[in-house]
Image 1 (tube, one colour):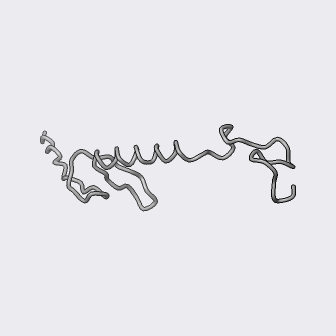
Image 2 (image 1 turned 180 degrees about the vertical axis):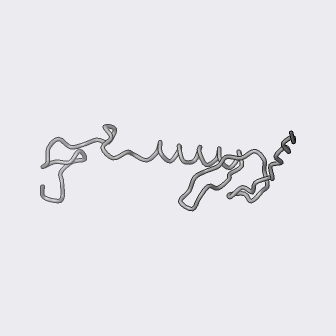
Image 3 (image 1 turned 90 degrees about the vertical axis):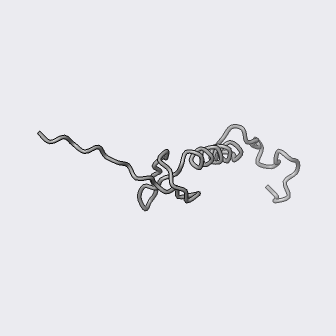
Length: 81
């Protein structure tokens, strides 16, 4: 029986820094999978989680809401409600 040849992985090119790497993550996009090196992927995760932490979610209980339609939480309403 023939022995199988060992697969040789070619280095992939990072979509962000355009460097060749064997240590990468595949990221799914609308156009297919792209490869990001470990450093670029980790920076991307850190930046996206930082953005999610600083932007308020819609319907979040952390956002102050007015209980009375005639007054806003910051004083009299100029819109005439």
